[in-house]
Length: 253
Image 1 (cartoon, rainbow, N blue to C red):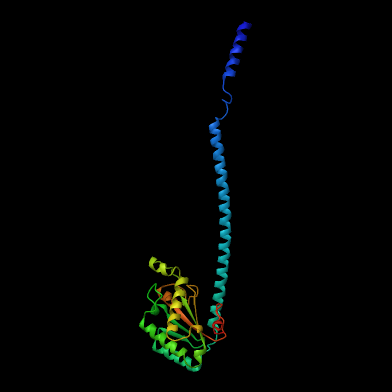
Image 2 (cartoon, rainbow, N blue to C red):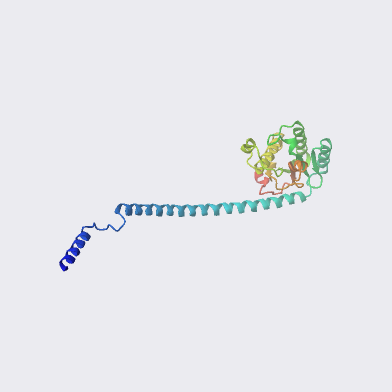
């Protein structure tokens, strides 16, 4: 009996010794693949961390730019309000002639108190355009330039300001030329400025700005009010005026 038990024990021991080492462990190939995958994941994680750092840096820069833009807009808006409150620097003769121009052309508006002239954009430009191609508008600008080139008025500076309504630019063709209302209002102001320069006003007296939809005359509640808000304003400024960081006297030094 003891011999039989001993024999059985020896057989079991022999079987145990015959089992390859590591048969109860993960195969070497699978382990290597897992190690490689872990290294790949670690590398990807490092790349993601680097990407996140770069994104955060870009976000911080963008936020700072946005803050600067908002600050500049607030400053420009305050200066615009101040412009509307200014007393007209025009002489009585120039004021009289501009009032006469207003009577002949109802679409041309003139405030003798501030010296501000307004022309509806619908008369100056076709929808989505920044090209002055209306004969009546061209005549108004021609007569305005003639007034500003005579007498005491020829020493005054001129700031052209463009405005739009609150509707975003929808047509792709228009967006390709004027990405936003900011662009459209500025481009239209520049178009009027170039027209005035072509009509003989020295470029050193001229400046342009665009306010997009941010300075409406009335609430944009319907088509009629939106038409009022689409406009170009022409401010006549004393020679020592500095508006929107534009100082025309620099060009004369």
